[in-house]
Image (cartoon, rainbow, N blue to C red):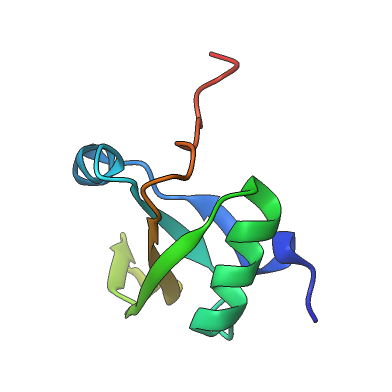
Length: 96
């Protein structure tokens, strides 16, 4: 099995995702090759919580320009993770 910290890259924290956190639903950027069962096992191992549901989607690359140079942003994968009702909430801003 892969290392859980290689599967979960970072939490995605925006206005929409902070509203979802109240319902114990969290959003993470994950490895593009990871599947739902690997994501579930990694979240449970890193944060010591119980995951009930995982939904994933691939965010496509977008064309970007900088002056006369053009290219694409990187494609990445997003995972929506639903925690069980008896799980503790995840704290991302403990040290702030």
